[in-house]
Amino acid sequence: MKDYDVIIVGAGPAGLMASVVAGGAGLRVLLVERKKDVPKVTRSCCSMWIVEPMTHGECISVGHSRVVFRLNDFCVEDKGERIPLRQNVKFSPGGKKLIFANECDPVAIAFDKEELLRGLLGQAEALGVKIVAGTNCVDVIDEDDGVSVKLNDPDGETIERGSYLIIADGVNSHLGNRLGINKDRAVFGTMQVLSYFFEQVECPYPDAFLSFVGTGHLGGGLGSIYIMPKPGMIEGKEHVYEVMIGSPAEDATSLSDKMEYFTEQGSFAEWFKGARHIHTNSAVLEFRTPLTTPAQGRTLVAGDAAAFIETYVQGALIYGRSAAQAVVGRIQEGSDFSGYVDHWKTTFGYNQPGEIEKATNAYGINLFSDSELDYFFSFTDNEKHKGYTNEFNDYERIKKAMYRHMDTIRKEKPELAERLEGYLNFEVSSIEESLQLTDTKDSK
Image 1: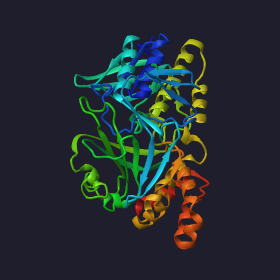
Image 2: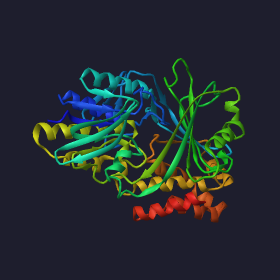
Image 3: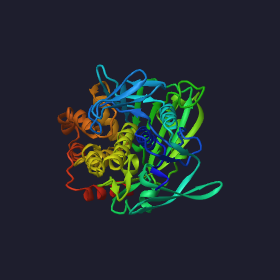
Image 4: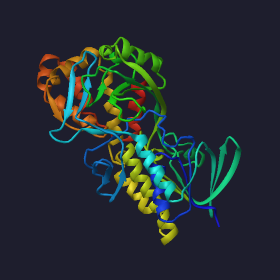
């Protein structure tokens, strides 16, 4: 008899949700987390509820103290502070705007991720889940009759054994590599991310998700910049904003230099004249194609560990729950993991045809020159377009907004119009072609 019915590695949203479901079904659960303070968010993370309907096959409702997953038929407590974001604003280097908003719905909802994790952790503890924090899982063996994991903490190494394993160790899944699960996943590139948290920012858009398009915002370097309010992120601090910069790892300019340029010299430096930098997070993200089959032997992979880019917090909760249900079904009813695999294949956004191609192509708008972007956004500067904050539909929304003005652009700047139409009307027949497109962009 194994010591545990299921061992879960990683106590982010996917791993904690899986532990709550498995513990609630009466399973003996071991949850392993490398951080000592399990709910503490130490990596760059937008932490938004994405409210656009049918994101990852779900329509969530964000209530006063809980989030309801209507199609998956469950809910989670979310008692932390929230900020409904009423606009999604994109800025050209010269400050021209492209605005997305909805008549009634927010474009997304910023929330306190640490409070969400704290609530899930409390549920897991109450259900008798054994939680081992401050511990690294350095190796795993998936055997015919169970799984063994090698754990390392300040006191040394131990071996734990279980009947099944759920890997929820994030986008750069170490254990997925160890088991060979990731060997067939195409690599799109590595992104470095740096987040500075500021107080006393004079931002004229307090309830918006802001993004900044073009290399001019970064002093000529490649990358993307996002600003959003952060509810509850820093204890005792109010009106905190996160400035997040993501850049290809091979870009020569450091992220700190880009941050300094944007906040001290760029077009929006005035916002930060009286601001105080109070906290820093960072991350390194390896973008790979999603796992085709997130199950191998007695191991399931859940959340960002199986994903391209990320699953969002809500996706991590959905797939962590689904993976745990699959293990419960195997132990209690003898069912296989096909239901979990099918759920993943049919609902995760980047498993759907064309979605990865759209995401990689959307980044290409940054490669237009500063003056060209200012020209494009001059047409939309005083407009509002319907839309949400959601990477899956970002490209389509930009396309729709720009096409309203294509006749004028063709008349005024026909060569530029041809290049813009090439960006807006790209066709990629395969992921391999999309990968080549991304490599070309990153090398410039």
